[in-house]
Length: 271
Image 1 (cartoon, rainbow, N blue to C red):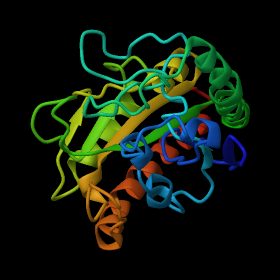
Image 2: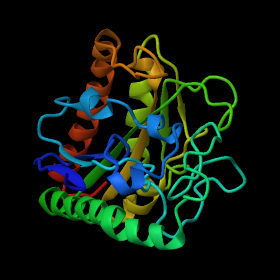
Image 3: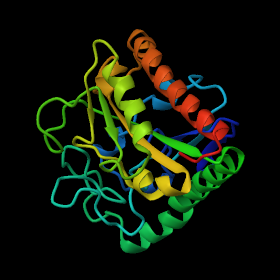
Image 4: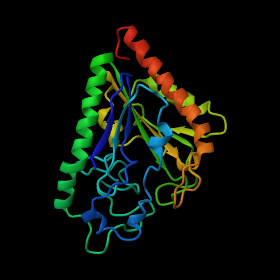
């Protein structure tokens, strides 16, 4: 399969999907242990959840699994959250801190370098090209990075995660108005909880591309999987009823962002 799937749209909104892929090359699959082969840390069904919410949005979706290499991590291997439990560029453990590789078959530095070239770099080349294309059309581009995670993971955070987890690296990755649109849209969603720059402040993708002074804005949405899955354990089934309710609010947020960007273009500014 190709490293990424691309749909080009004419909207100023770009949806990044770095963690929905489940493809693992055979030689890498053989090195995963039984725990790793559950692929538990997938952002399950997120591409389905967002499908069709904004017809003209560009989407860039990684097809490879994050255990191959994590497309939302710094290629230099720098931790997103120094001093906190997290997973790296090529994870050694799952989100519960348990090993995912057969003993003695953990990825080497040479493996990581090869996977950077084969998977990480092509995905980000495509994403970067789409950001440039969209910005050339509108004078502004908003990268909305789509994620999900289990609502309870003691290894990573205490207690239950809010339903909507918005990350802007403490306001550095987008115009304040964009942050406000997403924060307010989540807060107004009745029956759901939300937080801005809580445990998740935006991954490497958001931090790398979000340069508001250039007209490129980035924001990450990390959804608790309890909002759209029937169960957060295997088989990680999609719950259509839950998803339908959630999609109403996600569509509203995306439409507000699109309107903001188009209005900014009409004003001749890059926000």
